Image (cartoon, rainbow, N blue to C red; front, side, top):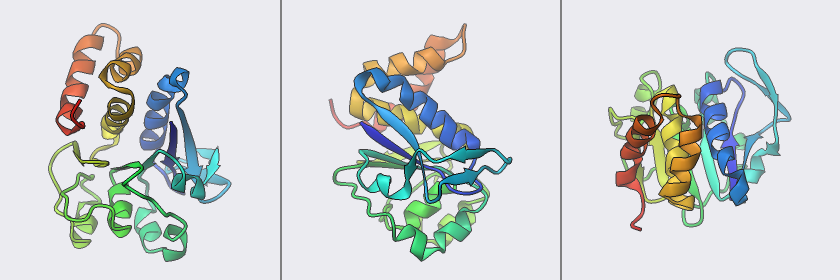
Length: 201
């Protein structure tokens, strides 16, 4: 399973790194989550510079595409030359967006008429794009999902793992990362949020 974690200039570390870290717990099943960027290096909103593992076009062939957020997302959403490099297909890909990443999904026409989640700062721009915003941490319809709030990236990762590898595999990966002393309760709560949006068994 190839996962493109879309990471742009000014990115939010919590979005990209939490999703990548959790999804990489399934590497024993052949999963590979990689930082995917439009340039060789990108700098986070807090000054952390990372080297892209894959170019932006990798997203077009990936099995899963996750849009992270960042402080420059509104400018990126207006950059047609950049977004035209993406040719995504919900028929064969799972696609998710985190906070202002939801704005990029709206700009690409991926949300259609579905409601979406985002953060409070991005909400007015997503509404302006014609999307109804939910006051919820996570929402999905079929192969499309959105999450709101930096730490909601765990829901995106859990949804991807449960959708493609099954609940048992997702539970195992999340259990490893969950806080000691509350692992079962933590994982149960997390999976309880995404279970209603999973495809039928």
